[in-house]
Image (cartoon, rainbow over all chains, first blue to last red):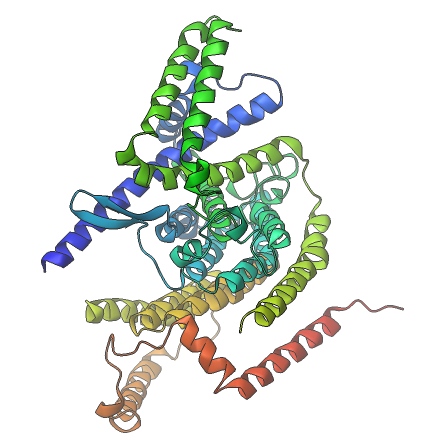
Length: 397
Length: 165
C-alpha cells in the first residue's frame, strides 16, 4: 500500500511539473516565434511590455481571458463547445509518454524523467494525434459558416493525407531500433551522433527524417501548409467564429502539437536526450560554452547599446546567462540537467526550423498540397521503408 | 479498479451505441460511433490487448470515422425527417427480451466459466506477440488479407478514374 501511495504521489508531482513547464513553454513559444520572425524581417518585434517584451505572453493571456466570450446564435451548440476542448486535450495528452531524460535520483526517490512508458508509445502518439483532427473538423462544421466549413474540410483532408507518409516515415527508424517504446527507442541510440537513427546503419534515415518534417508541418497546419486558416481567402479558417479562451484553445493546441512533433523527431531520429559525442571529448562543457558565449554577446551589446533601454537590460541578461553557464558545471545537477539540456536543445532547434520556415516560405496552392503528398511524398516514403526493411533483414541474423 | 473502469466504459459504449440510432443528425450519429470505438479501445486495453487497442483508435476512430465525418460535412447532409409512426413502444420490450436471451445463451453455453479470461490474466497482447503470431501461425490468412486489400485499392482507383474520351 505504501508503494502504491508513493507511486501515485510521485506521478502526481511529475504530472504537475510537466504541465507547468509545458504551459509556460506554450506561452513563451509564441513570444519566441514573434521575436524570431521579427528579426528575420529586420524589426525588433514585441519590445514594450517588460524588458524585450518578455511580459508580452502574460499580457496576451490576460487579454484573452478577459475578452467577451461570444456564442453566435446560429452554431450547433454542443459540438461548437466540444471542438476546442477536444483539440486542446488531444494536443496535451501526447506529452504524457514523451521521455525527457534518463532515470534520476531526487532524495530517496529514483524515477524516470517521463510520466509513463508504454510499450506502444509511438502508436499512442499516432492514435492521439489522429483524434485531434476531430477538434478542427468539428469546429469548422459546428460554426455553421462557409469559411469555417471550408477550413475544417481542408484541414481534415490534409491531415488524413499527410498521416500516411508520416506513419511510413516513423516506421523506418522503428525497424532499426526494433521497439515501439519511446524510452527504449532513445536507449537504442546511445553512444554518439553516429548511433542516432538519422545516421545509424544499415540505412541512415535522412530521407525519412525529411519526410517526417514535411508531414509534421502539414499535420500542425503550419506555413507553408496552413491552408485551413489561409487568412486571405478564408478569413481565419476553422476558428473564424471562435473568440476569447475558445480561440486561445485552438492556438495553444497548435503550439502543443508543434512541441509534440518536434519532440517526436528528436526521439525518433536525433537520439533523444543523448549527447552527440562522448563525455571524454567534452560533451558536458557544451551548455556552459553556449551560455557563456551568449553572456559575452549580451554584455558586448549592452556596452554598445543600439537603444537606450538595452544599456540596462542586456547586462542583466548577460549576468543571468553566466550564472546558468556556472550551474551547468555543478556536479550535483549535471546528472539530470545535461540530458534535459540536450533534449531541449534538439527540440528547440526543430521548433526554430518551424519559425524560420514560417518567416521564409509562401503558402502552397491546395491542389499542389494534395498532389505533393500523394504523388511524391507517399511513394518516396514507401520506397525508403522497403529499402530499410530489406537492409535490416539482410544485416540481422 | 479494473471492474470499475470496465463498468464505466462498458456503459459509455452502450449509451453511445444507442445514441448512434437515436440521433437524427448524421454528424451526431457518427460522433457517437467514435465514442463507441474509443470505449471499445479502453476495454481492449483493460483486457491486456494493447496493440489491438491502439490499432482500434488509429484505424477505426482516427481514420475511417474521420472519413465518414468528412463525407457527411462535404455533402452537408441535414437532419433526418421522421416518416410515419414510431415502432419504439412495441419494439423496445421485444429488443430487451431478445438481448437478454442472447446474453444468457452466450454466458451459459458459448463461454463456460473455465474459458473466461480474468483482468490481468492475459499478457500476449503486445506488438511483439501479435507480430510473431501474424508471421508464423497465421501467415497464410495474413497474406491473403493483404491481397484482398490490394484488390480493393485497385478497384477504388479504377472507379475513381476519370473517363478518357
